[in-house]
Length: 205
Image 1 (tube, rainbow, N blue to C red):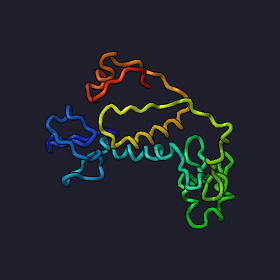
Image 2: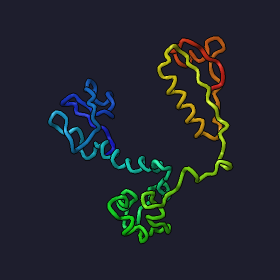
Image 3: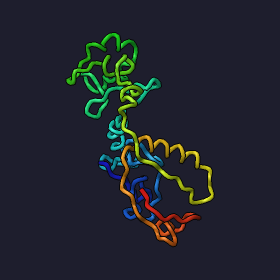
Image 4: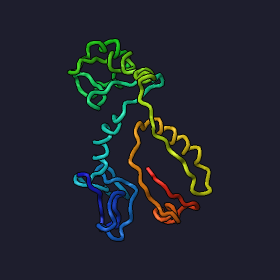
């Protein structure tokens, strides 16, 4: 069902559809969906429903990293998924944040891993304190550094790139393979099709 939708009769295709399968069809800024319409007609079928696939995958993407609250606390994850109690995934830390659920049920909501909401959820007084969970003395230090080179004259985004550089330097604790590219005469302009004013020749990560 995770397929795009084409409609040769109306000469339209959904945003993920290739023009090769519908020559001359205009791309509509919609994902294929059998529940919603475009120009009064559905833009999908049960077998052409990218929206369903996105909805199915959203919990996995959302739980890739647990949210860290303003106090530096992170809800516990179990096998890479947000903690929930024995009654199912609907009864997670978000559910316990409602009303007095922590006080009423937090100590009884054991899961197969032995944690209850009072232990797993920040809102119930549990979770993991990301500010102190790794002592500074034992934390892995990054040997990775990023060199920024403005290869043009536009400096509008320099500050944003500097911020990104500092964030990645703090996250990456090991170096990655380099690429000895470029031409001694033209630098990386050959690879980048002459997009920059200044050439660069050297290793690139």
